[in-house]
Length: 139
Image 1 (cartoon, rainbow, N blue to C red):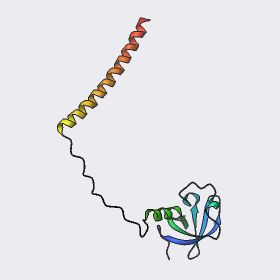
Image 2: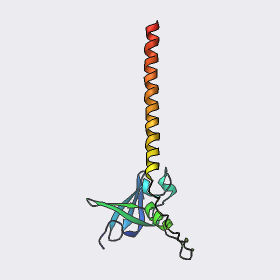
Image 3: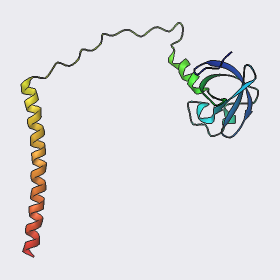
C-alpha cells in the first residue's frame, strides 16, 4: 500500500515525546503526529490525550523526504462536519437574490455624502492650521 496525502490509516502509538507522538503505520512505516495536530483544543501535555500502545486513526498530511506527517484532529473535524446517519437534513432555502442595482439618484447621493465628508475634514484641518498660525502671531 502506497502512502498518499489525505489517506486515512489505522495506526498504533509507538512512542510519545514532548513535541508529538510517533505512530506505527502499516508496512512497518512510522509517522509523526505533531502536538498541534492531536486535538482541536490547546494541548500542553500530549500524554493527557494519547498513551503508548493506543490504536488511533490518522490522516496523512504530507510526505517529506521519507518523513510522514500525520494528524488526528483533522480527522475529527471531518467526522464532526458529517451529519449523523439518521439526522434530519436541514431544510433547503431559496438563495437570496442579489440586491437591486442602485439608481442614478442613489449613486449621486452616495457620492455627494462622501464629498461632503471629505470636504468637512479638509476644512477643519485648514481651520486648525490657521488658528495655530494666528495664535503664534499674537504672542
